[in-house]
Length: 392
Length: 191
Image 1 (spheres, rainbow over the protein chains, first blue to last red):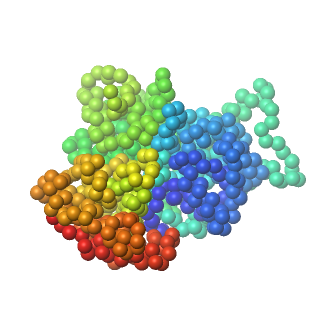
Image 2 (cartoon, rainbow over the protein chains, first blue to last red; image 1 turned 90 degrees about the horizontal axis):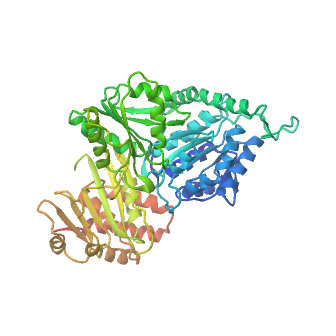
């Protein structure tokens, strides 16, 4: 029996973590994630979970504590946002390099300077190359579902990698929406007991994590990390299949909306995808074949499957809620790479939108679709990359 | 009522406006409806103007941005009428529910409401003071909003308030809020 509730994204993810009852949780506050870990800390204090909460003095320490606890042999979680994720940066590489399946919701928020607490994707995009698996979530329901699935993916014996679950700060973390909770027993049964792999606390078999590896083998070690990423997509799909059996909600590597016969399309992550879908319905009603592709798995990036899904379109706008100054937006770079080897490919443009929590409104999607219609009809592309809705 | 009901709340920090939006979302969950409740986050301080939003629909709610053209505008603090444009984005048949001592005709004139727009008033601050001794007008405002939209029954709303206030407040405060909600429902007037 599912329970239908009206809760915030933070509350839903905190509840997923309660249902999973991890061994250790590193806790440090940062807006807009704070409320998630605060709720989880209450579960610890109220005896609702058996988790050992480690209250640390920074996110760097939080990730360090998580690494130690995961290497010791525990199921480990933490959560962060923005500057917190940035401060963790060097430890993120150690978590993935040591193949520790730490699970971390990231409530996406802009980076300083200037100081801004609102939602954009600069934080998680900056962690793109840290060797973590990344799952992105449109709404509170997806953030809850992705959190539960993340444990099965990261802890899979063929994978053993840390996973970030990304959700939009404030827009999702602090908005109340209708969410369906699974039962505690269902979630526990789905995730299963934690399986250890080379735990440090197995004192009869001493081992070492993260020793010095010189040029004779470091290169091969990194190749092995690349190769394990190649196995992740199948595991993500298998886990999604089991999750659908339990919940009735289906997930893939990415979601498409009215894309099969689309002439023009928007590629966009997270909460802005929902607003875009409503605008697609408006354009469809006018006879315009518009569609959407919303990546869910960003690392590893499913290049070939995304190329297959987009190659029949005439023009595509890739929308980035983060920028690489002096370069293209991070999602755009992936889509261009994906389509380069495709036989047929659409014309491509890149729009940077919604930085620092600037609202993404239906009128923005309408503007983009109107430009895509012109581009598909042969108008020249003025600039590959432009800022959408920026004040002059 | 159209398929999706969109509300915008205007209040000041510390009046319980965000709580009102949350309780409304919670109470509207029944019957398989989809709901959203979210405030606009700015510098949060007591007395500062703030907005909060609700969407309530029989369909899945995918839109994740502020409500731009609300079906209903609820003003928890009447002094805001002079300082912010509370009619921004209003539809030609939007409903207004205003917490004020003034009568609805006077407010109607002040807002220059168009013929199809309906203006309701309720003295929610007075009701709150009489029912539980504090100037927190959110519960009578909720009662009034329920009455004019008919979105849920009064009994259903009262049950939900009992449930959501029960976690945080004493029985005396809960009883006061229940009474205030009922009076907001009963005393709201159309102009």
